[in-house]
Amino acid sequence: MSLVDLVMPKLGESIMEATILRWHKKPGDAIKLDETVLDIATDKVDSEVPSTAEGVLEQILYNENDVAPIGAVIAKIRVGASAIIGNTPPPPPAAKPAYEEAKIVEHIPYQPTATQPEKQASTGVRFYSPLVLNIAQQEGISMSELENIPGTGQDGRVSKKDIIEYVANKGASSYKPHATNITESQVVNVPQQTADTQLQTTNYKPPTVYSGNVEIIEMDRMRKLIAKHMIDSVHTSAHVTSFVECDVTNLVMWRDRIKKDFEKRENEKITFTPLFIEAVVKCIKKYPWLSSSIDGDKIIVKKDLNIGMATALQNGNLIVPVIKNADQLNLVGLTKQVNNLANAARNGTLRPDDTNGGTFTISNIGSFGSIMGTPIINQPQVAIMAVGAIKKRPVVVETAQGDSIAIRHIMYISLSYDHRIIDGALGSTFLNAVAKELENFDTSRSI
Image (cartoon, rainbow, N blue to C red; front, side, top):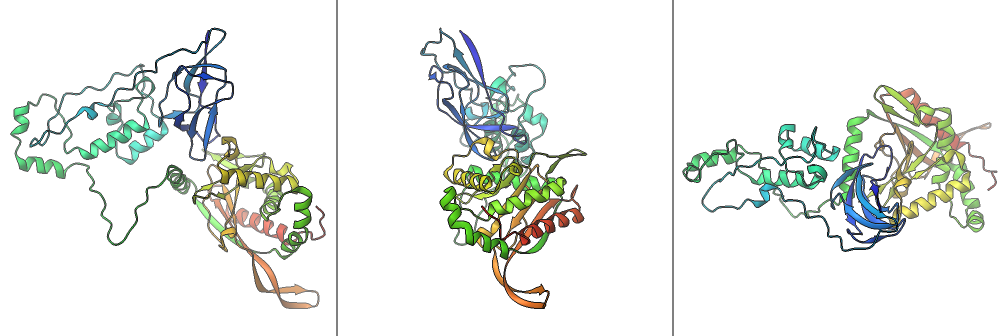
């Protein structure tokens, strides 16, 4: 008999942890190779984790709603000829934090009890996940205070659930004990004025009262993660946005002419998105810094051109699947990749790898009727391009016979870029190059 570690899989260069949503198996259950063992969630996508071996689930090391770092051992699987399905009892439930045992005593403002921080199972510096540290920072919890929070995670670690319960308990409490030798009689004799003063000096925040006719909707998990991702991006990159007007009449006429034959031959509908991606890829090869990231004072230029395309979900949320090695695909390949990823996003069947590794992002806001926008950079990238709705407009056209006014298909393109490394000259030059690539589209092109 031997034990095989089931580890939290690597989900992308910018993802350091994942939340365990649900275990499909419990200790003692038989598991087949590649059978789904648990569901996890990151700030980009929900996913399933398959088993890396066939055997029996021996032990679960993280509970549901726990946050586990990438590469951490989350379970152990017993394999080998002697791996027999047994009735292995599940591990005892984690001890509830001490504050859950507290009971409210009527007429007594506060009755402290002597509490000692739980001993950690391992010696040395206590580990905290980035999520826990972020919550602690937002709630004003110092490191010394964090050290005293009982942990129910592996080796006594503080999980997301632990710190959220601590914050809730801290807000509900009207007093923070500084001594552990107060007797009941001393507490009973505390003057009411002192108790009121204590209530005024706590961190308690009364619930917000909304006036008027309102509807209160709790954000779902993905919307909270998107909100955090957007705020983090604004705090990280120096955002600048440039705009350009683009005459895409040739492009529109060509697509209208070939789209029926294209669908009949390839069994795929051709949209404008693969045509935009094709133009962007050509221009990134001329200006490679648009496909890069920043690591401290180093610029990491990405040679693999992986283009993300922002896709709206049915619930109103947004996700960015990635077309890997887009520069290696022809127009038919790009069209199939765009359609397959868009369908997978809307059906909820995207894999973690489908949203990882992007080096540049395109957002087609024109599909919702917007003519232009100022998109937020998708970290750790340094640029994102938004294409607006294509509208017929009267414009001045220069010809050999002179200027004239004609009806043309006009689109506005915007580029948000990180001004730390992309200056206005480079950003605008790249944006104009994309516009020229689309304007000079070859209408005699075959499919």
